[in-house]
Amino acid sequence: MAEKVLNRIDWMVVFFVLPIILAGLATMKSFAGVEDSDTFFNKQIIWVLISFLIFFVFSFIDFRFLKRTDVLVFIFLFFSGILLVLFGLGKVSHGARSWLSLGGFSFQPVDMMKLTLVLVLAKYFSRRHVEIKAIKHIFISGFYAFIPFVLVLLQPDFGSAMIIFLIWLGMVLVSGISKMHLLLIFLSAGLVFMSLWFFAFAPYQKERISNFLNPFANIHGSGYNALQSTIAVGSGQVLGKGLGFGTQSRLKFLPEYQSDFVFAAFAEEWGFIGSLLILMLFGLVIWRILYYASLGASNFEMLFGMGIAILLSSHILINISINLGLLPVTGIPLPFMSYGGSHLLAEFAGLGILMSMRRYAKGAHTDDTKNEFLGI
Image (cartoon, rainbow, N blue to C red; front, side, top):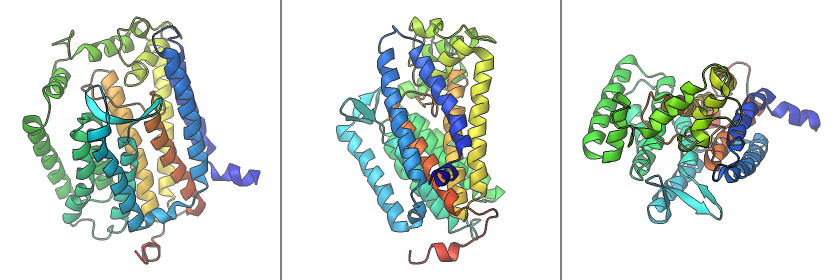
């Protein structure tokens, strides 16, 4: 039994993820005495334990039932319904009605919707790999992403909407689309952005994007967060100021040090060397995910693994770019490191499903599409 448990889990993934989690916890704990710091630390430990439990439980479930169209449609409609419920019962935080309150905890449903979208797109493209060059599949798959994209954008949660778009774009690219269609996607993206700029973006969102071009134009207003984050990262220099000596966070110059700007808070204390180590660990996590994607028993498993890698990579690249002042502030958490339970649950659920797929992974990919979709 013990050997079965050991073989079911990729302990290298756990080994790479655990230091990232501990780095986030250490950053939260290092600001003892700062308002709410102990609350963040204690709640995060609970979320981490629950997330690891989900990871191990999901590793032992045979998730091949997720290949069924009716199951995925139900899950997709369920979380779409919850996103609709937010407009009436959602909790407003940082100007976005994107949270549900459950007792003393708050939950952001969009994180599970991102995972659901990965599953839906993996299912869709796995059945159409032979005819993937047909342009209609760009628009049909885009419709699946468009529904949560609009629901999230109207909250308004521009950051999560951006992640949803990147999940769709990334999975379209790995599905084998032609270069002509690739050009069409980028042209369409440009038109969508222009439409959003003139008809959808709120003034504060336009201001954030303008700060990307000139972040120091309004350092006492909308550009304040980006400026303080950049200062925190730079002040860490090579070796950092030391654990508990991050002045930008302790003196409350750096906002949301436990979530959106946890990387900046960590970089101030651990410096360039510590930041580089975190980036290496993230790279190793993505490598292991892509490795298991390559061992997928069918196109569905392969695309799902690639989708999880795209989901995590999008969060990592956008969050760190925001912390470095390279992108406008959008409120995107850093996987495994930022405070919050909803993104942790979704991340570990995705990894757990990936571990479950190891049960029937093959050393070399073979296409058994005809058998796996019978009766659907």
